[in-house]
Length: 234
Image 1: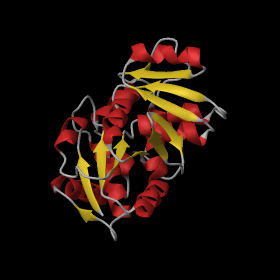
Image 2: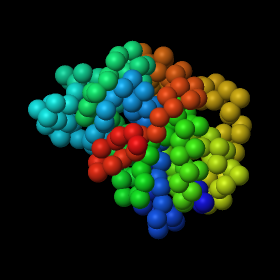
Image 3: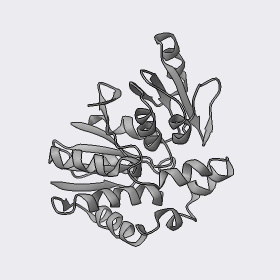
């Protein structure tokens, strides 16, 4: 089982694991954390979209809209990108159409994999168990911020690698770096990311609660899987 890390979506086309593989989309602040939270709250399905124009078409199909750009909720969407907000609601049976600055773009970029999953600290152990049961080569795709590197997604990749360490062969320098960073940070990943640019961005926008929540592990033990363009639980 080979594990490769793409540090940004811009690097994903240049990965070396091109044959049959799984890809885990990671946007811990906040899209993949929020997706896990929505399913934990009872959501039935989430449709990831990369454009706001497409988003509005889903309201007529019975979906609630969730949209975020540059950290803030967009327009008349019922929800933004806040995992703690989702967990305060009963979303049983709800279908969400969801578009964010980085995370949904990353999920859709990963759609060419044989298996596309969402990863975060919130579902760390459940995700690792699923990957171990699949026992296939895996690319950990970090969302970053507008195709730039960010440390928090790389830490999630490192944490996943550590969970798989006994079964996995690290493939490439980025995977080794992610694991090294995680080993440095794992006693206090929230504190380790104190100077991270997106942490500061979200705090300025009043999302400090989301930031702290996103660094907690195993709060939402679900594994969203992309099936025919729709995230579901399998």
